[in-house]
Length: 188
Image 1 (cartoon, rainbow, N blue to C red):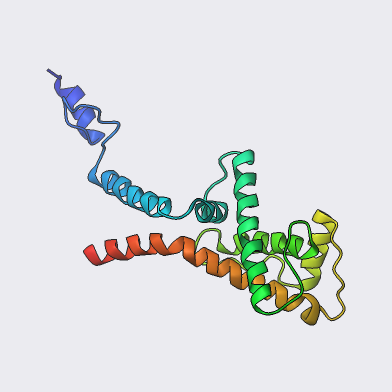
Image 2 (cartoon, one colour):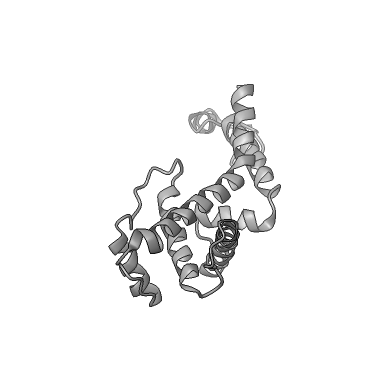
């Protein structure tokens, strides 16, 4: 039995006397949030592993450097593979094989794309929109020098192709989550 003062303290915190484990289930809002989070996690788990890791690289908080680096490598491999196939379909002789200049450009595009979509809705500006900034970043971070002459013909179209492919992969990753959110919106 609680004294009146003790009961008043509990009521002030939103608890009822004799309630079991109040720290876990404080309100139905938390329960609803947990149920929704479970549905979203289930939707993410329905994706193939490499697409899950691509999405984790773009949207998940950093857990550890090792895990984050692994996600980045898988995301880069996925993007490079899509770009390589797109180049083949166009009849281009270029490839996007590991450690080629195109592969390093794909890494840079992935960094740019990730920055742009962080926080959702793609609201952030491209941090390296100017080609000279991007070229300088590639040279400083990866030792890859790209000629600025004929940029549009040599590299500009390829950078755009890589952004397009990143958007396609991102859309594939977000599609199951979007379905869950649409179903919840319809149910509400």
